[in-house]
Length: 245
Image (cartoon, rainbow, N blue to C red; front, side):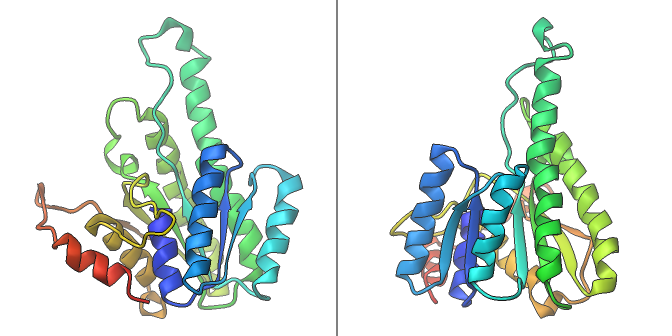
């Protein structure tokens, strides 16, 4: 979903720094997305940086400064991942299952806190942050998403705490609960499905001045209306909308 939001913000004229983890899959996706955005006329950089590593934070900070003296928006993503150990696994006691939860908390909560600390000093009143969280934060998730449920729930609590801390400075922060693994933009493409369009549109709204009175809240973008999936718009119509600059 982060890729879908990046495409939406680029279409609205934003300059983007795409921070990603250093693993091969993340590098490939981020570079492909940055190349696609640059090809469309957007100013975009893909930077590999572990937000828990002080050595790489300087690199990320310098990359941000190359695009201008201030940051207008921050989009953070909590990634849903399947647990490696079940509770029935004897080896998981105090090790595997606990390790999954700790790793997920470090990935989602630590990254949100550090990203906020990095960007907040560069943000002016009227700036905003959005954190994309797994739907498991609300309903506990499916089997195997125990760690994602815990870390996304903790990240949501951090969003609400940051809203109180940043509010006096005129900086807002909200969360979107969604399927965080969907809607990744691919190189050479600008096609987004209806769910990705809904999430990116919601993020664009929460980052805009139209949401100036909205902070510390969570919006669930799951397509559910009274327990049933809402009617989907034709794919051709959605893709045409997504490709309009």
